[in-house]
Image 1 (cartoon, one colour):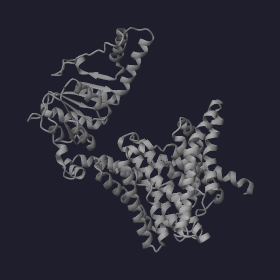
Image 2: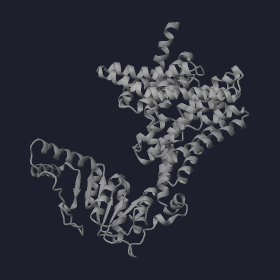
Image 3: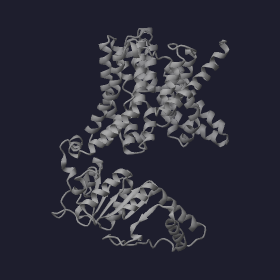
Image 4: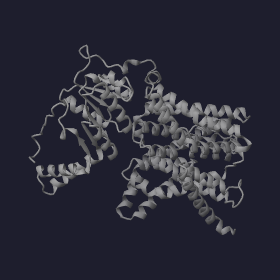
Length: 610
């Protein structure tokens, strides 16, 4: 192939093969990242057929690293990290220490130098940002409490890996490499380390003092021009320019410069638009980065060193996952949180690739170590959906065994599963609220404002403890498990409110509640038409579908805004409800409620009349 076409061929073949690999991986219900890596293996020097230019691919991958790290910085939120810092910071550092120690032990067993063992173990300790975020999004838990802890944990890992990328070039000589600053200049390790940290500190000082003022101001001036392409160009120029300048002027890696360029922008009003504009180019070059990583992988290691590959996978999945599980439980979080975090971290990805490549480039890590890391990444990413599925089954199994779950979570502290006595005999004619998140807490506040008795049942241990400190009767446990509703006094209760979105658990809770108290009234939250119809057939007191209620509220406002009176607007909304638009099923519109409390209407006199 003529040299002048090699660059174009590398880009075209890389993207085309990555596309087909990603499609195949998606069809197999695997992350597309697996397909990108296999595309790189296909055009690499270790497989027959066309061999792409590894040098050009590495340079394209460098741009991919810059844009990946820029994206990580854009999504980095100090506020989000601070909300979960109590568990994320010590947990992530503890889990990384354990994984690094396990990897170091494997490296020592294979006779590698100490420096190689440290780099190898550290590369096995950090999860993939891309895989973790994608997995949480697919399960709709990214914005949940469990998701925030997993993301905060990942941010701490990312920061630790960024620090490792900064220090590795300076420490390479002292770790046994032949190209580090120590080896080149013969300077003492402490002096080299101090100079490196000094350069990084100076760079960060300029970025965080000057950059936070100049960059947002510059983007604001560009935004005022009204040119979309000019704004996109300014975002990319900022990311690439700071990355290049940091490397040339301060000796800081491209990755660190791009990361802090993203951090600076993340705190500005332009962060969302910058992320949206940079996303297409970032994704394209990130694909080329993963393809270039695949080109470095020698698949024959799966045959030559199957036991070593198996050991690496065992460190990544059961080793890291079990460590994270134990740490989260030790901080007092429920098993569901521990399982979500442990499944999320049971893989490695882009930071591992970058660190492994840097280690090989500086002569610290042998090429065999990079191959083992790549093999572990491919297999762990491929197996990650199965890990989530397996831990889901484990979670269900544990919740069917409340005694075992209680010993795991509470470690002998059974007081949270016992309802404090009220006037010696517990509450009567009360409402049991299952799930005290956003929806349940609003219901609870309304009932407490009228001095109506409530008992909360929640699977979040810390939430239950906080409620009890405020004097709210609360039970820790899964209401779908026999024994929990009894502890909440369901046989004396008047109403059970299911404010959680899990349809299967809702059915189970209703069955248990009615078996123990056939006359109990029920109010249920649901998220689908099918569940709404099924609840209607069961004769629940009221079933509310949140999305439809939102639509009815908007409809009512629109009618009033366009001139309809309040009575007319309510009548129209009611006709739409009855006409089959759904949203709410209320048994009391059909038959008298069995013992349901009379609802009292209150009106704010400060509002204008309808």
